Structure formats: C-alpha cells, structure tokens
Image (cartoon, rainbow over all chains, first blue to last red; front, top):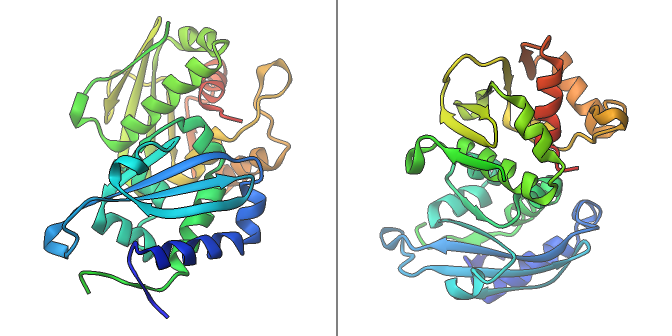
Length: 139
Length: 139
C-alpha cells in the first residue's frame, strides 16, 4: 500500500519503519532531540504550500513523527530544509541527505558536530524513508 | 574568540558553508580547540571529488577564512570523498593529542588511505595535519 506523501498515514508508516530498524536503534542509541524537516512548496509539482515533519527521537526510538506546519517543524532542535523535489530525491535514493547538506541543496540548522556523530543513524533514517511506498503529488 | 568567515559570502559553496559551521561550532563547544585554531596559521585545501567541490581554509590568528576553490598556497591538501570526510570527523583523539587509528573510526580512515579514497599532500606538515584533525573531530 502506498501512502500520500507527507500525510498522517505516511508519518505513522515512517515511524513504524524507523522503530523496526535494529540498525537505527543501535546507531541512535545515544541520540536525544527533535528533528524538523521542512518541505518547501513547489506549486508546479502540485505542492502548493510549505510543509513540516516533526520527529521526536529518543535513544534509538521514534517516539512521535507527525506532519505539522513549517513553523512548528522549525521549532525542533535540528531543522533540515529543502524544496519538495530534493526531499523526493532523498526518498528515492537519488540524493544522499548528507551529500545534499554538503552540497547546500538541503540546509541544516542545529549543532552540526552532534549530527556528524550520528551520521550512520541519519543514513538509516534516510533508508527508512526509501522503504515506505509513496504516492508523489507530481507523478 | 575564533571567527570563521566565508570569503564568498552568500555564494559560498555547500562544502564551505558546512565545514565553516562545523569548525565554528566545534571550537565554540570545546574552547580548548582554540589553541589549535590559532596555531594552524596557513592554508589547507579540502577537495571532495564526488561533490566536485574544493575549499581552502586560510587560518590566520583568531580568524579562518574559507574560500571556494584553491586560494593561497595550501600547506596541506586533503583529497577525498564525502563519506571519508565524515569519517575523518569521527576520529578520536588519543593520548598526546594524536588521532587514534586503532579503533573503528581510525581503521576506516586508514582503509580509505589504502584504497586511495583519501590522499593527503603535505604530510610532512604533521603538526598542521594533526591540528586540523583535532579541530574537525567531533568524537
């Protein structure tokens, strides 16, 4: 079953995928903090408004993942921002999120040294997104 | 107080922006790194092949200016890929302030060197290389 991109159902499926990952559980064992993903609107791709995803992550567990407004997502400890098409490329394994940040295609706000320490965890989170089937609004 | 400046301002490439943030936050987080920051006193080139991006870090006193591309006369030249660059930041600093190449992150860096994914020019400038490693280590 495929989920509408960035819907509540998608968020629940993403959370379940993270919580079933032993790789993530180990790599993020010491992680404490919230992560916000900001998906910038691309009206020509049927994404007319900015969206946010708020992730409450704690010691290898996703306690909550929900679709929120951009403003709410920006309240997280770490915020990664990019246009819809970049996030879609990440979810389709066409763009590595870390590389995206290094290339300036995704913007990070937060303590970078902490994020670098958890590179493996963030890579696994990206892997988890690729395992959640999605109906993309521009396809 | 260490100051990190992007020479190209808003036109700084993603690698310059990311490494600048990492450097500034790392020195702020661990003030003891300020001594290394001041003592580099020269230019260091970082060339990340898979991103097709190069930056030069020019250290002078309390200021590091990060340029897009090659600038000045780099004393140390680090040529690598994005994944290995992250691995370098994971190096633990052992006794005497030397990088530990015997644990998992250290062995990963040594393997990258053996496989040609990490090439360091100017290795005879060992003190500069060790200072740079300590400055970017988040472990």
